[in-house]
Length: 455
Image (cartoon, rainbow, N blue to C red; front, side, top):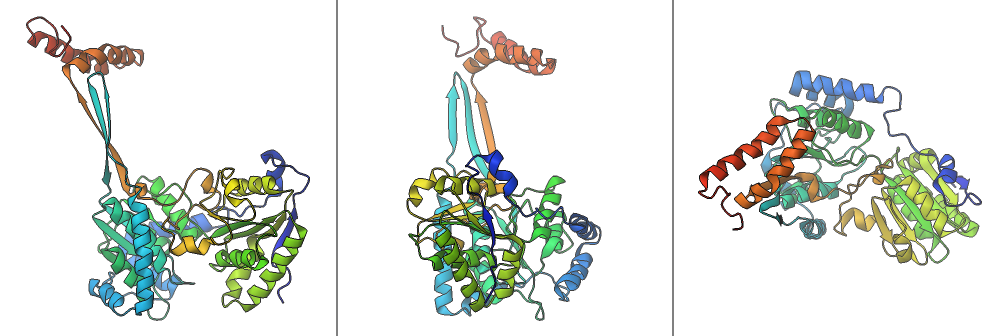
């Protein structure tokens, strides 16, 4: 048997206030603090920027053990062939997931916003970026679901060109068939079998074969997440505000839900591999003991036992709380990617949740349903970035454009205000830009008043 894979914390007696709780909550580092990690990412990006495709090939051989061919792009015909060759039941499941994702994200499209005030009309419009890059992880697993979660919102937003990068399979050097099939379903334009920081660099800087993109979305390991921040920090492109790193879950459980439910859901996110977070919060020692025993038994049976234990050994905790109020306070301080409320009164607790990527409410709503089929995005904030950011949405592919129109009456009304505010800031030309227009308009009118002014 696995011997206590979850470390225990007892927070009882500390109350629910942040200053008292925070010192007792261990948090994984964001990766930059690891010796050499950020320097390694910067070195990879510099190589790609300087040497383009040659660097991408060499780095792929070094990190993935794959020698890429002369043409980096996967032939478009392979996408449709993968979809056509997919097992019918798997294709049906992918199509069901794609429909759910598409319909949910279509509801996020903002309408045009029109505002009129005294002769000044302002219209808020949105325009999609020209070219979006989607990063899909690989290596430990195959993620066609992430293809759908990243590419479909881009298409819903109206992005004309969607590009996918994914690490190649070791040995074959190919992109998994399920990934290519999902790319065909999602309407991806280009697929490249590259991953890691070198893929981010290729999308950001462009190479001879890969044109640069305007935004990069999708989860990845610490190297990928840091690489995205590095290129965004140089103003090369946009990335979502969230840090989409290794997977996290916090499960709040009591004795109204079978211990196996909580245990398997702790394992679900842990099986993605090391670097993530897997926490149980409960106010019952009996629940804590039962869940711990269930985790030990289920981990022993799990095919991905090594990955699960790697996550739990690093960031796996069983936390004894005073009650639901303190448990939610702890969850808010963590700001987890996935928060599961497997307890009585779960719906009532949702109002107290402030910081989480996604909340799964009640015993029949495990995070795995959100990972695949609920419709909302599974690209979620990690490492506490849920305190200021949220899930991937169509808004991450849209730019807001304001169109301002001014009538003669409106000019007369606002010109004095603009001139005074400009003068207060010492910007004479700003003031003159409205006053000149006002003078010109008045000169054109026989009564000396701007057309449209009330008579």
